[in-house]
Amino acid sequence: MLAEERTSGRRTCAKTGRLIERRLRSNWLFWLLPIAGLFALVWFLIRVIPKPSRATYPCQRIAAPIACGFLAWLSGLALSAVVFRKARRLFDRSRYVAAGLLIVLSVLAVWWPLGITGRRASAGFTPSDPPNNPLGVARGINPGRVVWVHDANSVSWDGRSGAWWDEGNVHQPVVNEMVSKSICWLTGEQTDTAAWDALFRYFNRTNGWGDVGYRSGEKIAIKLNMNQDYGDRWDDDIALPTPQLVYCVTEQLINVVGVSGSAITIYDATQYVGDPIYDKIRSNPDREFQSVRFIVNPEYAGDGRIAAQPDRNVPIYYADSRVDYSGRCYPPRGVTEADYLINIALFRAHSDAGITSLAKNHFGSVYNGADSMYGWKPDHMHVSAWVRENAMSSPNALVDLMGHEHLGGKTLLFMIDALFGQEYQSSGHIRFESFGNQYPCSIFASQDGVAIESVALDFIRNEPRCARRIAGSMDNYLHEAALADNPPSGAFYDPEGDGVQLESLGVHEHWNNAIDKQYSRNLGTSDGIELITSKPGVHVSADLNKDGIVNFLDFASFREAWTLGGRGGRLGD
Image (cartoon, rainbow, N blue to C red; front, side, top):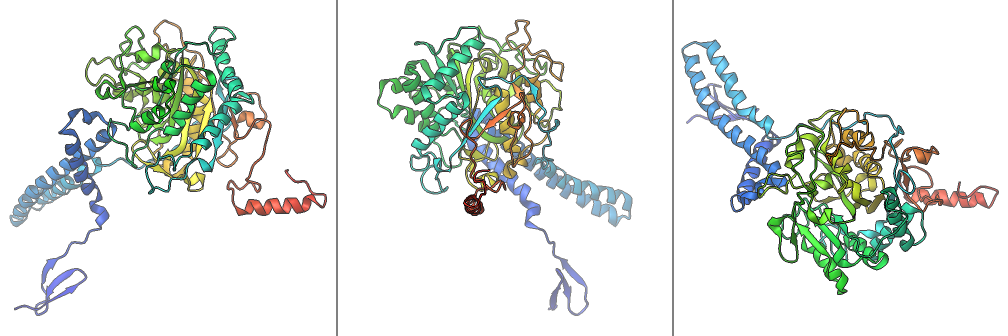
């Protein structure tokens, strides 16, 4: 028997020194994509075979190309084995050139498919316009104002104890106070009643209906982003609107404004409105809360939810000729029958659209005209809205949604639910590094749909955990919307198809930097965005040393200022 020894991964005969076997080394990361492909294939088959309609779900649209890439890799592996055996025969016949070409082909057959199983790494996003360079015409009682309310006491979920939406993990009294601050700071009013009245009066004046507030019988639709709700039970890996925030807005409308519950519609026409939100509203025994309507995708109707029905008398036209069904797309009847709309978006990046915010939230407000079970799906708009495939100065279907008279044009209030945050559309809740590795615990509000989207973009692009998802012409649709009357693309935005081009939909700009977060109006100009982080007229910050972080060093600054204050120094500079 021959003795053997191992040296540097080789097995040799101790007597002759002849190489017996070569051990291949490989880094386990080298095989990560094939393993991911296998899991994607299994997941796709388990989910889609019992219910084929799930093939259109976002998670399956992500899994499908990865699974296909894995199958292509397996096919390439089989082909490579055949080609490699053929190459060996050619070597034995001294046909070295032909054998070499076949070896190259066998290697490509294995590894080229791996390149299609994953996305290229994000190249990041750099705004095309410089800081503090406003575009468009600001809107609102206080033009261009965006309110940011942050309270770390609003969320206390540790990621393990109970569900993230449980009452012990999201604190209703704190959320109530945050919503109250949002509308009061936005309008400059002192009470919730006065603030809501100011919002309704501004909206009615702007639309030529007189200086009147809310009138009994008028209907209000609330658009939620339920994109990850497929009618299943919620779990801790799902990122959806915070029930406590939805409840507070509904409660304010009923008890402060005086809206009848039957005049309020909470909806997402493409998905479901799950039990945590539905049960939260219904938990109030008052008959007004019991009569609030919920409109969902017809596939999920029942259990108190109403099937969405397209209003075929209200078509949506797209300026981008690549978008299918222009003039044959319709919003849901529950929206066209409403007098006002409140748009509540989520706080996250999007792997294709850049961010998921208020404009994209209306992907859940469009029937695509296909007259099939997939009619309430936004796929026809993807070609126009995906920022990775479209350059700056391209027409964008999001602008048509932002400007349509029954969608963006009917919006009384824009809000972003940033109590939690997500890396991208298919991730669960994460802590943001830019918020001290805590949940964002924030609410954003505005009357200017372009301004609030611009602020959301600045926050998300400066969050390290989201930034890698953001690339391409991220702010193209904001340029187009701000300059909708004369957009860089040269498109004619006329979503009603009545021959009247849209006016500017609001003001866009980027802040000066991620520490100070100053927009043009914060810097004393009369143009651009104004980001409000405290009660207007009150400028108090816990970040006393201006390092962008609130910590014990700020207490030291306070102590030093207090000491100097007793010796002629100035406290509160």
